[in-house]
Amino acid sequence: MSIFGAMTPRRARQLWYAPVLGTATALMMVRLLALPKILDVTNFARLSVVFLVSSTFVMLACLGLQALLQRDMPILFVQGRERAARILLVQCVLVAYACAAVAMLGAVALPVNVGSPAALLALGLVHGLSQQLFMLASVESRSRGEPLRFAMQSLTRSLLIIAAGLATAFATKSAAGVAVAEAIVSLMIAHRILWQTVADTRPATYGLMQLALRRLPKLDWRAAFVLLLVSLLGFALANADRWAAASLLRLDAFANYAFAGSVLAIGASLQALLNASVYPMLARLYARSGEPACYALCSRLSLAMLAAALLLAVPAYYALSEAVRRWYPAYAMAIALLPPFLLVAAFRVSDFWSSYMMITGYQDKLLKTNVLAGAAGALVWALATRPWDASPQTPQQLALLAAALCVSGYAAVALVSLRCSRAKVRG
Image 1 (cartoon, helix red, strand yellow):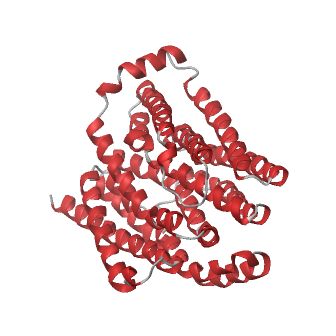
Image 2 (cartoon, helix red, strand yellow; image 1 turned 90 degrees about the horizontal axis):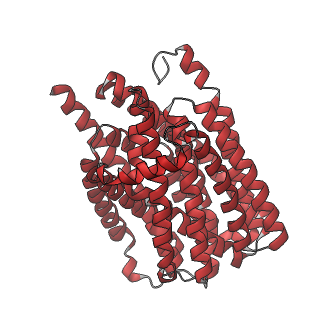
Image 3 (cartoon, helix red, strand yellow; image 1 turned 30 degrees about the horizontal axis):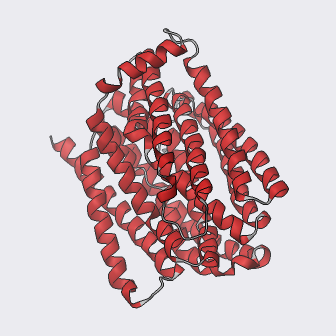
């Protein structure tokens, strides 16, 4: 039997999205491998800072409203509440723009040690806004259970981003030029999808925006705030090592760290693309069949994906090591960082436990669990590496920090998910 349960005709049709989505992901992998080949080490380090600022902005998740949208939109569609779903989407877009405007004012205060001007930090925020808007725009297709449409949206975006970004990299050799090109493409695609989503809604678009603004105070801001804290903490656990690397390492060492970190970016992209289909699937299953069915599917998916990822990590290490030696000799230092990063990527790509806990309303427990798991992981790392004995910190130490935080977080959330599910069954 499939890990998804009985293979209905509808589920069989949904599987066609996999090769399209896989192609979109592969194109983004090509981009990550091509950019350090085209740009010099200095510009690649600066572009890595732009991407780090971008991902930090996306982490804000519209002050938690994005998680609320991902959780509630599939349920609203099942209930036939189309206009309510679209109003929530518009509210998320408005809050995303407001967050970008406020964050732009503090761009110059970000502490990075790579000689990056404030303009690059501001550009990272614009890049992050473009990513955020695409994520919001694509929630609608995922929430309707149309992964093939979402896959086509992702493929279109990937094709245009890789064409614009790499062409600009060849022409300008500039980190800023690449970031501008990618941001423009994502903004155009996101706004086109958003327009198509709300175009036939009554009231019309301007009236819908006014209605969305008036209803902002009526949102479940407590749930959004808790989900925001979950997002902030999750980002902190996933990126603490990268911010430390940006602040503590020399320019060449950070460039190597960021290059090896492409493995993590690829793993995160794969997980995001998988979860784009899995999250709304779990939400719809929860709305129709309840929490036990939701947990059963989540556990099968997570454990099967973890086993497959760990098996693939071994040949991946040898293949990537040889590729670095042959084609990226300037980044030879990155080879030593591949084992811990591949381990982290395997756990991250298979983590659907957090989705289960957010969908079923256990976000408070998820937040507490992540706090305790982060503290435990950091303590284990500190006792094992004794960072106070090494100054400055080495890239290997920071990579081990990423591994300790990731593994402890995965294990803790999986265990708490199991306990919540059993408590629900007994109750």
